[in-house]
Every structure is written in structure tokens, then in C-alpha cells.
Length: 136
Image 1 (cartoon, rainbow, N blue to C red):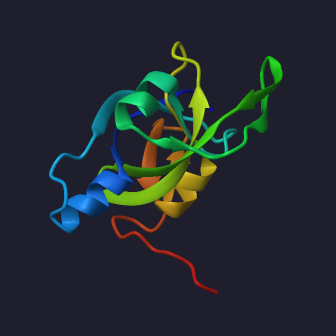
Image 2 (image 1 turned 90 degrees about the vertical axis):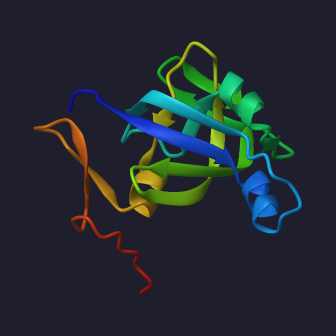
Image 3 (image 1 turned 45 degrees about the vertical axis):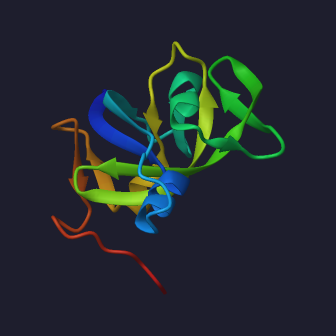
């Protein structure tokens, strides 16, 4: 399929929610200009340095993750607001080693209503410019 790289913005959801209530003004955020879209990955996956910069909190237990190098244990973190272009939603984050690129998996792609165009190596809105959610 090739490589699809995109620019993403990730914010700490708790910071964002508190800022909406005027209890805290600073929203921790990272901009990642070279995130890799990976349809073989499930979650939003970030290098640990970005997770630490965002101040995301880990879930209590690690999970088994199948990688190209075999099964490894990884932490999941809650409360990341992912923005791709003009679409934003909250996602769980799986940690990656610091030398790995940020990965956008199928759950964020589906939730934000994007598909991968393999011919142009770009993301396209599944329903054009309009984000559409299913509630069947």
C-alpha cells in the first residue's frame, strides 16, 4: 500500500476539559508532522516521549501486543484528543519506543471517518468533507 504520512495534533483531554471549565488554562499538546497511517495497527500509538510530554495517565495493566518482532507487553493510556485536519476525537493511546514513528491505526481512522487512498497515498474523508458517524 505504500506509506501515508500525515500531520497530527494530540492534546491531553483532561487539560482540555478543565480549560473549558476555566479551572486550568494550559493544555498540554504535541504536533507530529510525520505520523504514519498504519491500517495494520489498532490504536493511536505514540512514542513514550510524546506520552510523557502530554502527561497522559496509564491504565492499571499492560496488554500483549503483536509486533513484527513478536509479542511484547505495552502500556495503554487514556485521554488523548487526536486532531487530523479539522476532525477531533478522544482515543486510547498505546505506547511505542521512542525510536518508532507515531502510528494512526484503524480505530482512529474509522472514528474520524477517513479511508486511505493507496493510489495518492493520502487520507480521504470516507463521506467527502463531511464526517459521518454510524449509530445503527
